[in-house]
Length: 228
Image 1 (tube, one colour):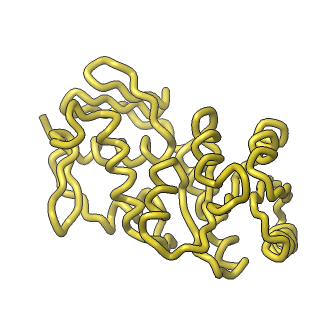
Image 2 (spheres, rainbow, N blue to C red; image 1 turned 90 degrees about the vertical axis):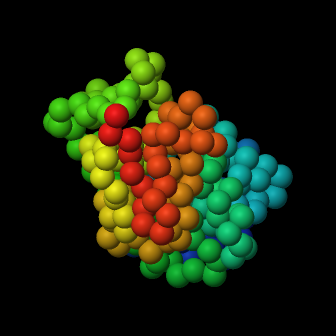
């Protein structure tokens, strides 16, 4: 039974999510305090965190940042602000998805299931031979990426995205194909999610992220990984 940690300071939202998630077969742990949430991550070992961006005291962005320093547990951010900058900040800090308030508990449950399913697919997707292009080697069995012989740690979504790009080195992959393959055909979020993950990948594998040589943007279409 998957365990969901809900970090939200609005009692009505916590009550609604607790009811819906429990009815859907999840175990729910809740807190409205960011500092307490960090302790619950350690003690409870949740399978996914639903994290409000605007918390009193320790903010949701800071909680996300600290969790990501030690864990790859999936995080879905909640935000009352329908502004692109807030979504981008959350994604850049390592959130897997976001939901803008007001939202329906049913929608959030669908997002939670999709994120958990993608995590399972990534974890059990081994068995393929390592792929390599332009000095980047992706080994799915070992869950390891090396760039010119140096090991580079990646989060699950980053790993899956890089593996897909390297496996198709030299080919242009459209934004739709990349989103469907990595986030699933049922993903209904902003396509900026893809851009944020590409940006993070470039920061980790490119010699100069501001002038990328490995992951090239094909304007208006998608991305292409260097073949040589």
